[in-house]
Image (cartoon, rainbow, N blue to C red):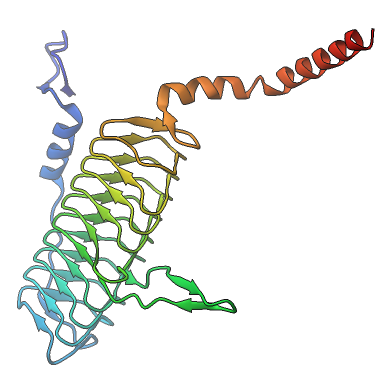
Amino acid sequence: MIVKGRLPNEHVSQIITDNPYLAFARVVRLFVSEKTLDAGISDAAFVHPDAIINESAAIYPFVYVGKHAKVGDRCVIYPHCYVGEGVVIGQGTVLYPNVVVYDGCEIGKGCIIHSGVVIGSDGFGFAWDGQRHFKVPQVGKVIKEDEVEIGSNCTIDRAALAETRIGTDVKMDNLVQVGHNVVIGEHTIIVSQTGIAGSARIGRNVILAGQCGVGGHIKVGDNSIAGARTGIAKDVKPGMVISGYPAMDHKKWLRVQNVYKDLPEMLKRLNDLEKRIDKIDKH
């Protein structure tokens, strides 16, 4: 047993720790055997002659690696991945099947990119010319720092001019959308179905729970927490805990939720009061 304090049962082996969940993760790792991978490039993969592939990397069948791409040592790229021209992938990074990395993007060391992720697609930028939407060229790139994990079917758009940056040790759940020019600080957690609009700045050690929405150019301060389905339309100070739409202090939002269920009855009482006041006024 892994426990925070010693249990009275002396017949049970106990691991006593201040952080049982962390200890559990470390213990499980001891029993997980690493996959045996055959280093090298499959004959069924296409690798451009000018790409640089470390000899310890494993490139599976039906992978495409473009011109001037660099794949580091012990990288694993599973079938049907696309690695565009000039892409850099750091050592020990894993791309699971059907990952797409557009031209010029950079992925750091020890990253895990799950199936269906698209990195570096065009940011959503259009200018209205009076008759039609004129596409704004998206000529920047995406940079992922070290030990980033991206869940399945996330999309991370390239910057319009500079870079979209995902900091070290950021962890994203499935189905997260990151717009162009967004910067996400180190050690931040982003849960499923969250959308972050262009040029938003997410601080370090932030938690965005499921289905959060962050508006464009919004700043979310370090160490802040947003509860599920929070709509963030203005800047958030560091260390705040917020919920609801529009986003507000979490405790205040709990009080607001308590009122919601009573709104129909409150409306009925208000209408009754208005009718009584009208009768009094007529007399």
